[in-house]
Length: 86
Image (cartoon, one colour):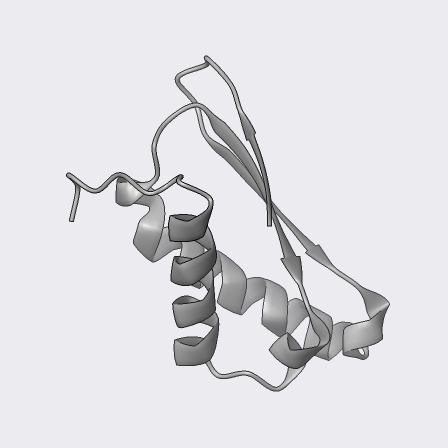
C-alpha cells in the first residue's frame, strides 16, 4: 500500500492488481473484493490521503475476511485510520 498525504478534503483510493495473480476473472474478483473491503473502512480513513492498494499474489486465493483483515492492518500501520471514528 502506498499513501500520499495531501491537504485536500478528498480521499482517493486506487487499486493495482497485476497479471501475476491470474486471468482477468481472478484479477477482477480481487479488485471487487478490495473495493468492498475498503468501503467498510471509508468512514474511518482520515481525509486528504491518496491511497494505492497493491494486491499481492496471495490475494488471488484469499477470502473476503482475509483481505479485510490484511487491509485493516495495512491501513492502521500506515496511520491513515482515524482512531476516533470506530
